[in-house]
Image (cartoon, rainbow, N blue to C red; front, side, top):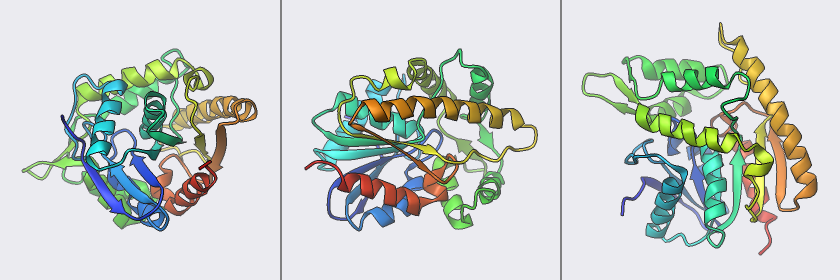
Length: 284
């Protein structure tokens, strides 16, 4: 049995399991986790091929869900509310689908995807894959901190998160994660789920779900105005589907956080408050 790297933040109360996004690590959750331990036991997990977790080939969602379940068993977590950001949000939903007796509920923070045929999808995929499994220069971490400052993320938080999400090499350079082969597998899995559309994707997930969108779009970098248009259009399409789901499926709650996509780094207090409030409202 291969276990994933996890960090037990401690705390007492309903169990929370925290999952991070693509090319990130469990360190993204540190600030929110510190706040959540006031009323919960909190365990954060590195997804396969990310942070300090071993890779898996092929990288498929069923395999990842099994690895998470094994890791939770090893940490004595028979039942939990699974909370994920971005890729982790989609994994949280899939964990709940496969483990209805172990997932008390799931929270998906801005974890929505598009199919290959969605206008502009190919261009976005190329952008995301371009940085996967590459060797970055020694200045890589500093550049990540500068980019994060545009979102108001404190430098110390941004630096810790950037260091945890990449692998340091002996010559001072950095190996970005996940490796390219795993990134390609992840892309295929996301495309498969995204092609279903949000409504069809969520069919068969019967536990309480909290689905959260970012309330603001990422500020466009020079030459990236096209991505701002893409993300705005896709966010509206998702919002339209979520509005219908919140009216027609009583187990689904929908919310929005006044932040951009990396909300757990940008506004950890708001994320922690929203998650804690959702858990308090769950049926016993």
